[in-house]
Length: 291
Image (tube, rainbow, N blue to C red; front, side, top):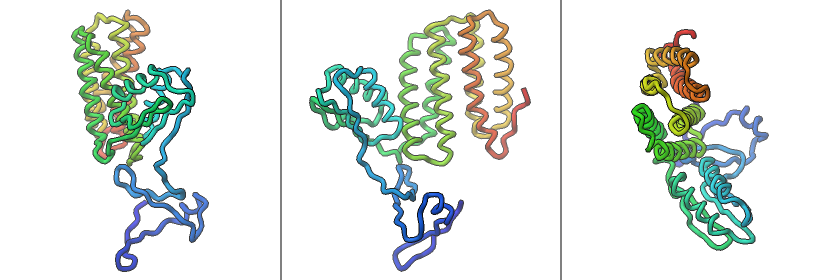
């Protein structure tokens, strides 16, 4: 809902808070509320005071290094600004190296600021105000286009490296969404997840399956290029992506390719369309033909 700011006194400004919000949060007149600024610069009103105490995760020397790495990554994606990993009986060298490797490979902006035999303190050194989600999506799109091109040409040597770069950008994008809670954040999150899913499927196909139809990758790459225009409201692009998905799925189901390979290709086609169909919510976008 739109509210207008009005002058209050000589050096202050005010706005009216709807009573429905007070009732929904169990507040009454004269109760305190707290104002904080989000990473994106938005002013947030809440009934509880915000703190920057961070998180502490207690583990043991027997906790698997892989599990510790995953824990750090999940905190990164969730938007944690400060994380302390503590073990009363000490952290092993393998555990510490696993945390360091995860931060260096998958968590841009995270840094170890303190370390002892029993704990590791990790803090965020980035400013989310400087992060542009559109640039993150564009970066993912460029990497996936490269994956399509190389697999389509029969060169799968660099796919694993590209997949790592995709995962790194994906996690940074999810972190931005969780920290800023910007407008239409759910759309950004859905697009990021679809992009990461497409990359995962390309990686699986390139490592475990072979296809005798190079045109599949060419068509998928064409649809992938159109999905971003469709997402921004280009009705013609949305129709083209819908037609491509329908024709490709029919052809794949009739093909003699490995059934699991067919499933992965179909999943890629559906993920491409899931990105494109966000254009349906934009004024002026035309819906695709009924399938």
